[in-house]
Length: 213
Length: 190
Image (tube, rainbow over all chains, first blue to last red):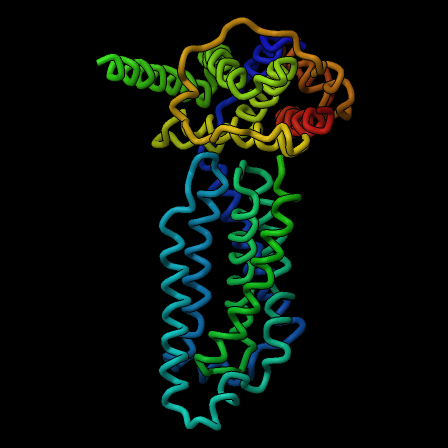
């Protein structure tokens, strides 16, 4: 086929393009990822019995705010990375700020704790399962975000995959907060972050293969 | 002084191509056809300077980039320079192309200068070595038929739906998915 014939083929009968299609795709992906993680947490882990009481405490909302900031930041980044020629944009400021804030909070709490109590504060009661659970809960979001990205045109596959993975991980962490009994900032700073890093790294590795177009 | 004139020329080309492309996105077939054909001249010139060692593959890669531009067109935002958007696609395809080759062929010069893209066009097409028509025939019926009816025979979506027995939305989806599948086959065939 000659190039002119290809041009003719591509141009013939073009229909108007929906400019909001990428935003719609990501709305669907985020909705699916959050709902999927919520269903999994309710079905597999169960909501913590004292949820009603802790919801009245500010620390519970601080715990949700951490992954929520990461979710908003990475969503902004990934939506930009899905377009050729765009940088990841201001979203990363929010991501860096959220992680920094949690780490500063963790250091303050640890300094206020007696030295022999510090390890217990970091490990909590559930450190063995936390990162694993978050990784597990991120699976629906991971699939949904990769579906959204595959329909668009990311040109930096590793970075897009990593951002997509972190987005899935942060949605999973929001859902996991409804189950997880840990209320210590140092615990979140280590294990929540680790749980979100697993899908991030997986996303970076799989992105190179799955997002190729 | 000359530099200013150059920049002015690039700027007006950018605006001209962007206007055509945006009309194309709104469904203006004539504007879109003109956009693609003017763009192919610029892309050919750009790819020629990048594929000095492999002149035989310029036209193949050009067709691949055009197909990619078409398939990615929903990701363009009007506030973004068109040059940057097209350049990112061409650069991606070029790097992907070289990745499948030996290290020896890797790009020696940097691929960072988007302004170069809309420099003087090169209008003389070469012979493509890969036949897109053959790859098109390999697509499954539900994708191939809508493309053949609408894109090659020039029927409207409604007419194509009647002759193929598919619904109108199935025809549109068939074209959309078919062109994406075609791009994957093109990549696999190089």
